[in-house]
Figure (cartoon, rainbow, N blue to C red):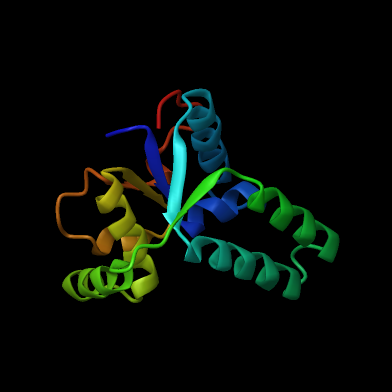
Length: 150
């Protein structure tokens, strides 16, 4: 792999709101920063994370002030937004081939393929749906909480 990691929304939200595997997501973030790895993602990551924060606030899991702080903190992270002309078309095909529940998930996979990077996800059904060799798609639950290398 290279110095780029693709981060999926289900992992990114764990940096903002404590839930299962937040410790592993935070360890990935720390190790990536130490090793100067860059995060990339399809542009939709930012909408997905904003929506997840909004839904948590709407359900009163977090306050409006917490939601605003989380969103500001997330938007300040150095994550490169990838938007290529053929991204949705390629994601559409990938979603069909792997019987995914959405094209959104497939966009992360295509960005990982385009950048020759690992993709970190906490979406177990998505992870398990990818039938081709999974050396590039990684399940956050497998990441050690104190691991030095992503």
